[in-house]
Length: 232
Image 1 (cartoon, one colour):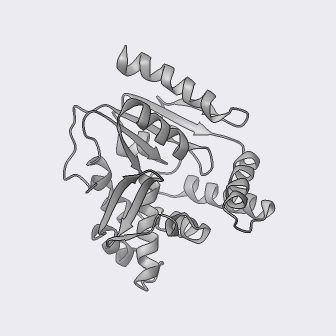
Image 2 (image 1 turned 90 degrees about the vertical axis):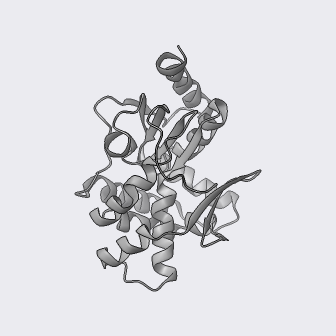
């Protein structure tokens, strides 16, 4: 779908924030499907920005140049049987934006205030009826501070690294568990220490630790909250 132009303030928003590997992506897709809501993968916007920067040979340390890339992104999201596909300038880059290198570059550009400002309104424009599930790091604190339900989903760094390791192995890619843990810790530090919209739970967020919880149990707990806040 094309990205909408402006938000619908009457549409309810559910935000799911948390660190990399906490299971936000899977939870948000399942939640959006169950509710018939739209889905915003805000991390994909930063990954697309990072990928476009590399493809265009822009110096990733040049904040203003990177912000210009973010403002002019030619992107679309399309739903298929395989999930949500991300298109950059008409090309399916869904796999490219999930590469480890792209993820690390996304953490770099996400720390830039000009980039966050460039993408803020684009993210808010996803607020459309019948509702939105927003996946990210600062959805409940910065992008949608008036969301009807805010969840902060977390898990231990070791568990998150193990999940990522298993994902890569299942895809047939080479992986090292120790390296995954190192990357997770580095990304946590970058996300939580940045000056602009650092990773943290909103004051009114419900914190769920998924370290020992299966996906279905997490989804069931959030659905109970949804019934209390939205469908009651």
